[in-house]
Amino acid sequence: MVRPPCCHKEGVKKGPWTPEEDIILVTYIQEHGPGNWRAVPANTGLLRCSKSCRLRWTNYLRPGIKRGNFTQHEEKMIIHLQALLGNRWAAIASYLPQRTDNDIKNYWNTHLKKKLNKTPREVDQSDDQFSTSPSMSSSSANSNSNVSRGQWERHLQTDIHMAKKALFEALSPSIPIAATTSSSSESKHSASVSSFLGTQERSNPYASSTDNIAKLLKGWAKNSIKTQDSKNQLASNDFDSKIEIKKGVGIEGGGAFQSFPGFESFRSAVSPDEVKPKPKQSQWSLFEKWLFEDSGDILLDENPNFI
DNA sequence: AAACAAACCAACCGCGGCTCT
DNA sequence: TAGAGCCGCGGTTGGTTTGTT
Image 1 (cartoon, rainbow, N blue to C red):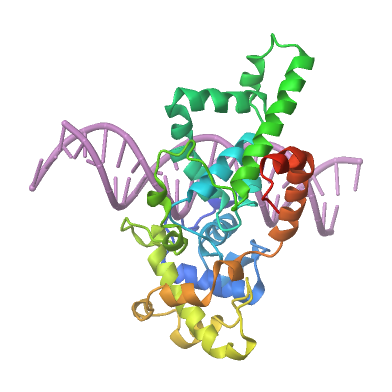
Image 2: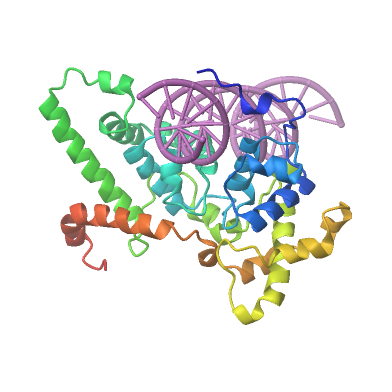
């Protein structure tokens, strides 16, 4: 069947999102929750297609998103997860709950791919992983056509094991991460704390500026802290209280945005843990189980201090 | 200071899978 | 069971910023 693209309707706006649109979208989602995206443009009056709304929410407005530089730890995780899972960015993102698939994809395409291609040794390593991992491309699979299936499977097992091991190392905070593929120094990435807050060095128009979103969220958070003091904490995805500030400030009048202070107090008010999506926990458990049960014996031999 | 190139990233597009009727 | 519609994902594009000459 041929389905007309959802965004080809007349009067559907494209391009960068405005603060007003963001507020409308966030407000609606606070009230109704994410999902049923088709209803969002209809119910909010936004001149955006449902896809665009979902994308804006998941990649930018959703609470708990970490922006800015990737840490070395994250970088390593992405490399190894990519080796294991291939370009399944959503799956990879599920192990980096604070990063969006789009962010990871962009980072891979703009940074990591180049890095891995830079040093021959790393290329060899990554080629090994990629050419024998389950996620390898058909072209790379063909390049091994002269290798017998048995050999290839043994190689595959070995590489999966090695990838697991590497991933284990990356996931384990107690084990020092050796400077491997990253050419960027720790100091360069040590700004992870500040990067969590989305410090973008570049000054961008609104749509690519975290500042404005930060201001918005900060405003909501600030208000919610006041109103929810007795509740003692912010629910991870619960912005119900934050909506109040919207009602107070109003979405009309761009000047309202000027009144929002910086993001700092939002940072202090909402810790990364608090905004971490809940469902990831079970994924972690399964993943860790898979990771550790197979590699655990060897890994624990090598890292007796773990656990 | 201007022109050009490279890097970056938000957003779009189209496909596949799932759900509902 | 088949068709229609929606959602999510991955690939790609295009605008903006930054760096270099």
